[in-house]
Length: 484
Picture 1 (tube, rainbow, N blue to C red):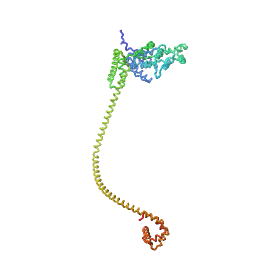
Picture 2: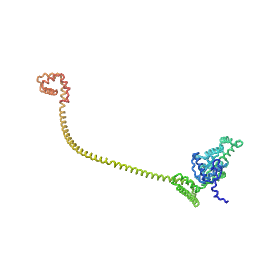
Picture 3: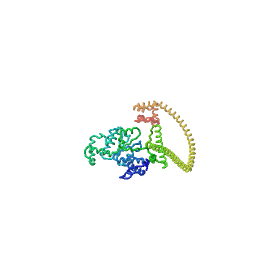
Picture 4: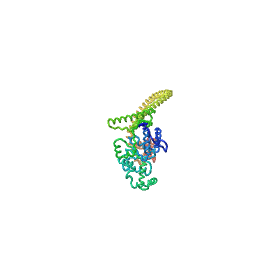
């Protein structure tokens, strides 16, 4: 039979289909493999609390098969070559989880340098060699802060160790930890043999997976300067996603939003695939004609889908906002119409009472008018009386003024009389009583006193008053303000 390249494009072997212990067999059904990997991804998310949202199309399944096969092999290392966003790191983490290996990766921070990198390498080698744990070291080219990082990785790939990495006290600790392992392996318990066994365990348990991008001159220069990156690694090329992969990824991401129907989702997925494929073809033409490269990476394809979903969500929010406003207006109109109907019914119901109230109001207005006319007459009479009262008040004021003038004239005489009264002595009274016929002025005064005392104004009554021992005191205490 004449075999062609196409006959081998769908050939894939793996040990992640069946349950443990899983045989290494051919994978004829990629749908079954995708379901099995989906279960592993869900377990990864639950156990490690890290999201693993991947789309397992045929190329991705084949890459997982290659990475998993390398991790099963002693001293198996991989060089994953592809542009950013092609899934190199995610597929490596999932393959490590399937192989039940811990995936170790450095974490860059401010001030991270060669010393921090060496500390991470110490922990990595201790885990693989001293603790005898199968470990995957995932390293990508964006973490190369210093080119000396690659020199250390080159030494690990080539010899299983980094020269002068451990201090003497750390080497002594390694010897103590690895001694039981070396003894169990049947080796002599010398210092050199134990440390050599530590290095052997590091080479067998540690699997370096390097994720590099072929873009630019840096990749070519690094391979030339550090040949172990090629000699000690199996290269896996992450080629551009084929149309079926683009459709699968678009369908996976678009399944999270409501597009109305499956037919619409398929149509939008085809549009996304067509856009990305046409841009990739135009980029190839651009390179051939102008010798300038425009990279169309899986990341740009995912950004295209995210841009569509964001624009769709934004436009839906705008439309939903308008719908809510219109619906609110309709609800208010409906409520207003209902209220108007209720008011009309209430008005019709109240019309008899309104007519009665109108008649009562008219009667009240008539009564008020009549009362107003009577009040006008009373007001006229009151005004006439007020004029008379004012005239009397004016006249009384004139009389008052005359009285005050007379009072002002009489007050000096009154005060003089009071002084004269106080000046009288008992002998003066006795002298007056001795008169048989008093002088005219004395008689006049005594007649006035008789009048004030309420007796007849004659001399006989006057003598009786004069004979009173309290006569002067009664005159002094007389109520001068209330003279009758």
